[in-house]
Amino acid sequence: MLAYVTMHLVNHALGLVSLEAMEDVLWYIFRIWSKRPTQGLLYGSFLVHYGLALWALWQRRSLRLRASELLQVVLGFAIPILLAQHVVGTRIGQDYLHTDTGYYAYLLWVYFVRSPSDGYWQMAVLVVAWAHAMIGLHFWLRVRPWYARLQPAALVLAVLVPVLSLLGMIEAGRQVAALAAADPDWTRQAFAQMTLPSPETQRILEAITLRLSWFFGGAVGAVLLARFIRHVWRRRHGLVRIGYPDGRFVDVTPGTTVLEASRIAEIPHASVCGGRGRCSTCRVRVRAEVGSIDPPEPEEQRVLRRIAATPNIRLACQLRPRGNVEVTPLLPPFAAAADGRRRVDVVQGSEREIAILFADIRGFTALSEGRLPYDVVFVLNRYFAAMGRAVEAAGGRVDKFIGDGVMALFGIESGTRLGCREALAAARLMSGRLVELNSSLGAELDNPLRIGIGIHCGPVIVGEMGYGRAAAITAIGDAVNTASRLEGLTKTYDCELVVSDETVARAGLDLSGFPRYEIEIRGKREMLAVRTLERAADLPEGSVSPGLASNSPSPPRISQKPLARA
Ligand code: FES
Image (cartoon, rainbow, N blue to C red):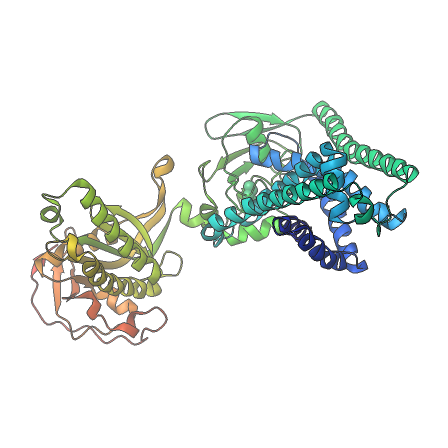
């Protein structure tokens, strides 16, 4: 249906070129959509789509929806009613009443000369149909990781197509009106090859239009009435109570989803995909009496598997309790699509072995002295962008920017070994990107920027921590503190990178050619062996790229006495 509508709108837009161009392209489009298979596909798609929309309306226990969802539903049910006259006048007239009026010259004459109110109606239909399609497409795509990148271009296209289409219609309509006004004989010549409806046929077409409009309006009305009767009947047979962590609860009829219950009770609840069971942002932890909830359907199971959900985690938009339950929404109400892709164990908190990288600009205080705040922010943002991209290119995630420092985590999902290799690859990239940054900022800086990087690995607690919009996935633990201390040691050793031998060994890397030290870590009895590199860019290239590291690390070689206490 979207292909049909898009072709139709692009065809209208050709009115900006000429009426002839519109008619020529219409001829090809007509050839495509007048074949039995494509007609079957188009009408079949419409019937399936409309039937599913009625079913979804019946399934909903509440019509408290977000404005965009409500708009999509209302526009969707309005389309067949608004479009009935056009479809009956062209398709049904042509297929069953032997008329032949499917030409722009005739239709534009009707819409812009004979009956301008019909013209406004058609333009409204165009906007309504396109808006409905675009909202649906947006809901469908917004859970895809790549969509965020394409969204600005998609928005431009979504606005441009109907605007050009309307302008094309108006321009061609003005042409037709001018031609008809200039030459009273124009309509007779222009419509000579068409079979226009006789007054009797016209009456039949209008009667069919009216009946179809009543049919589509009546179908929606019947479902709404049936919902109301079901609601009254179910209320008589008892309600189920859904409790929330802050003590609030809502009594709803059995069959109401937990997400609908949240909306009825006006409890903010994330639902990026609008309750279609795709995004997982509505996920809740459930405590229920035996027999209060049914096991998840295969579709829900698939999403739950994707986020590694434990058996007590369910999607609020799919869960329809039959008895009392207590639920705890697991993501904040303003969660984004990306949050829905996070595994439950990562968000909730779990112990993992990962690699942690800290990087800091050397002598930034001196560098910022005497500069305008604007200049400092400009340089810092360029630096953060370069370092952030290096971390992401290596496969890590930037945990936070602290002052002029960066903390990044590697291996949260992929494990320590790959995480260590990614962290070293990031250090190497960061060093290289800093050189490029220094050369592009040459005029802004008295001295080139220098950084210190510390990398360590070990067990940490990973989970979503913080409050409100400041909550984010982060890591805490000794390994994090140690990585931070290694970064501080780059000043002591006057080098760019200090990396623990453990990280190097896990990465399967041979750094035996670089100085090795043993340091004390506060609160630990064992010494920690580290390697220092004057420039992180000196890390061997291939060996630190994930997937290329050697599997046989060389044994660490102690070359110096303990030097420092971290
Ligand atoms: S709202 Fe998207 S899965 Fe429930």
